[in-house]
Length: 353
Image (cartoon, rainbow, N blue to C red; front, side):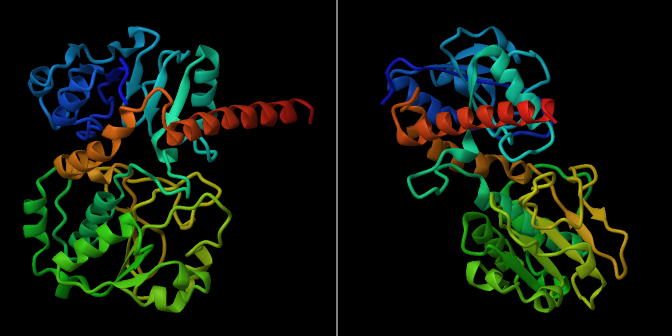
């Protein structure tokens, strides 16, 4: 458990990111357990800085983690700013750096240059490889909700964070206008969230998981009005849809790709090549009949309170086990060092070819 660990909760540089991985209540629990918790002020975090101060946390200026003591564990959610060029701390966040994503190699080189370590939240898993912390349920919920609202013409743009009760009121009774829906990966956290949002809209979703995707019935997939993809894979897998598939007869007109695995060699929907945003949430493909993609990589931030409460509750006991007093953190260390070795090998290979 906590043994004098120093946690530094950083400000998120993305203005649309209102979530946090440590709530004030869980910060108070960590402080009582013996941790030192420093929280950077943030104008868009869903919890005000006064709540953290009342929880016993020290308060710091946004971005001051760069000068934090060397033993601080810097905790965040999404991408780091482009500077400094050398990262010397242990960083806990979603790095998106191990599957060849854009910018992955550059991020790893920054850690190598500074001697720091990336403890990627995506790889914080149990012995069976199941993630211990995830925003998946709320990502699925919001992704499905946006798909329904877009199908019915009720999606207000730009997107803005809301309370779940407000989103549910917008969904209520929209199912008849939205049509039929398919959720792929329906048994996972993300898929369960998508199914729940569709049910809120009055839609009984078709639910596919491993059994249905081993022998994919593509005509059946295309015969739904909207689809939510909740499957993310690290292994080569036949795509669910390719550009050639879109020439077949289809009803499908809206896809919410909750995984947003653009740039990965294992992208299961290589029919689009960029994510969408809160200001431009829908990407229209150049096909007939029309097909539109919603692929927003921070969907849960549209329900920042619910998403933060759930994630922080999962992460709190693991933070208490830092720096490495838990098998899950040791796996994170091992995956990071393996990624550095893979990067060195790839660069050595390029210089000799």
